[in-house]
Image (cartoon, rainbow, N blue to C red):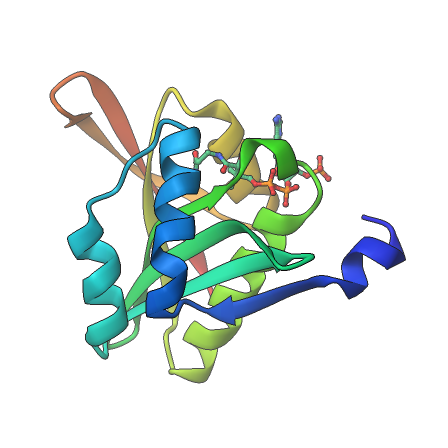
Length: 150
Ligand SMILES: CC(C)(COP(=O)(O)OP(=O)(O)OC[C@H]1O[C@@H](n2cnc3c(N)ncnc32)[C@H](O)[C@@H]1OP(=O)(O)O)[C@@H](O)C(=O)NCCC(=O)NCCS
């Protein structure tokens, strides 16, 4: 990403007023998550949600939970038009940093075995396949559990 773009780019905690923008990104990217999850992430002390903004436009989000020493990444999504610019990486690094501050030791996630881009993405950031969950996605696609030390 060039310096000019980087200056206008920020990661911020999700606020109630951002939820519609996140739902729009989900919808546009055919990846709808239930509204109740976002509300929960704003109200529960164990849930964390961050958004990426560029030039005042919301372009991505990351949701995760921390339970004792484990960080569970529920999702990262970047708007299709803004992918491959390092935004997903910035969201992930921010999440890992927050989890580290909260004393998490391990980070886990489950990703579809078909989602090669996401597997590549998480591998780049040091995650390794830890287990296979057969039929995890509605009995069809297998899930890959990935893990890294924080
Ligand atoms: C996975 C996702 C969040 C990555 O976001 P992004 O902003 O495009 O990622 P980055 O630009 O930070 O890319 C970091 C690395 O991920 C990998 N990667 C990202 N997009 C890729 C692609 N299209 N093909 C192959 N590798 C890719 C590369 O290793 C890349 O590093 P590089 O650009 O130096 O080669 C984004 O593709 C997305 O929103 N996908 C749909 C939702 C999803 O599947 N989320 C993950 C499961 S919850």
